[in-house]
Amino acid sequence: MLNALSIRDFVIVEELDLEFQAGFTVLTGETGAGKSILIDALAFALGERGESDMVREGCSRAEVAAEFRCGPALLGWLTQFGFADAAHDAAATGAAGPGTVLVRRTLDASGRSRAFLNGSAATLGQLRELGELLLDVHGQHEHQSLLRPAAQQQLLDAHGDLHEPVRAVADAFAAWRSAARAREQAEAAHDQAAADSEQLRQLVDELNRLAPEPGEWERIEAEQTRLAHGAALVEGARLALETIAEADDAAQPRLARSATRLQALCAFDQRLVPVLEALASADVQLEEACRQLHQYLGNCEPDEGRLAYVEERIAALHAAGRKWRTVPAQLPALLETSHIRLASLADSQDLERLRGAEAKAAARYQLLASALSDARQRAAEDMGRDVSRAMQELAMTGARFAVRLLPTDATASGRERVEFLVSGHDSGSARPLARVASGGELSRIGLAISVIAASANLVPTLIFDEVDAGIGGQVAATVGRLLRELGKSRQVFCVTHLPQVASCGDHHFAVRKTSEAGSRPVSSAEPLLGNARVQEIARMLGGAQITKLTEQHAREMLTSR
Image 1 (cartoon, rainbow, N blue to C red):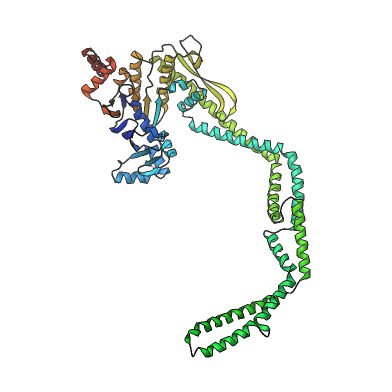
Image 2: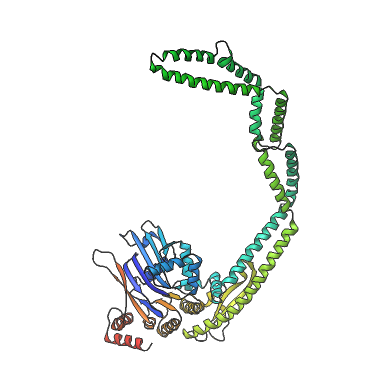
């Protein structure tokens, strides 16, 4: 359950710290005071989209923090995602009490937000997933969604706790469609695959015989260039060797004579020593050059036979490249991809295997969808009975609610379409909700469904945001009583304008908006006890002018609840 909520610079809230208890809590205040902003702040903390205009005007950052008491499901989730240790550390440092989780989210003026769970960074996806375990919000605009078939199906599935079967059916349907597409594509491509297979087989056979190797084209081109210029290479190497060491005026002997002469002159001038050392180094380099030239000439005899083979190989690679419309260097890659495509085409022609896989996937879907249909039928009967009973309590005497399942073609959500039906009296036939419900009736039916759905929901905290709009009188008193009963097993919050609902709360917070001259409006909230609560109920009854009569009426409402 929600223990505490802290808000800083969020919309028109400057600074607000609230603590909450179990049971039924009501939030009241004038229109525009910011009652729903508290709900919006809580939703923001639990991963709802954040916009830059949520940051209070003139401020650089908004921050919302909420502390929740952990149940078994929440502790399991924290352990799964690695936040259990963070929860222990937070408790040890006093950031949160034992058995609690602290959710904090910030939003700067540029629209960038950051989220934390017990001080550790968290993603918005994790916050939203956590929020599904913590609370369920029923908004005032949800009644209109009752007219949509998709919303009706979601409500039925939630009432019957059918989330896992629904997910299993969706997964089975996706697997079935995937198998069907594979089979359809294989059948459509069968003739083309046969033609492609023959051409690919010819290509693979020819290239297998040619056996091009990766990098061969670059190597053989370099070798052909070398062999074609073999005579020039040998002549040049021999001339260089003669010039360095073997000719009468070769460089190496002349260098030696110069070194000998300078050696003698160094006795007269030591500045010639570096020159002598440089000549010695040059002699070593020339000696190494001679050695490498001898080695090169020893392995560089022209090989006419090898040159003929290399040129023949280049011609063969060129011809294969032209035939298969690629450059010679890409022939090895073409051979490899052709092997893969040939194997793939062979797989695609295995129609019997693909048909068998499709049939197996279809059978699994039908089995799961049939079980889901049975479960939905049971849930429909339960929901019709429960909502009909709630409608009687909401001054819709004799009205009946039913859920009809209409068979459809197989879909990801099952083999039926959900339709809500309602009749205005015992003898009347049930008709689709969209065709018979007035605005006021729709609000009451929606409220009945919300209360019934909330009863079936296992989340610890339920929030009703002005779901009692459009009702009043004894019906409003009944709504308050229903929510108070629900508060005995859950933590329930209700934003309301109705004194009949507000007087049923176990706890009461008043939300006020103040605006001094020249300053921005500020929203605040405070718990109401004793006479302060009487005054608030009286205000809701009589408006700005509170009389002794309205005060007396307010006291009676609070004592008789």
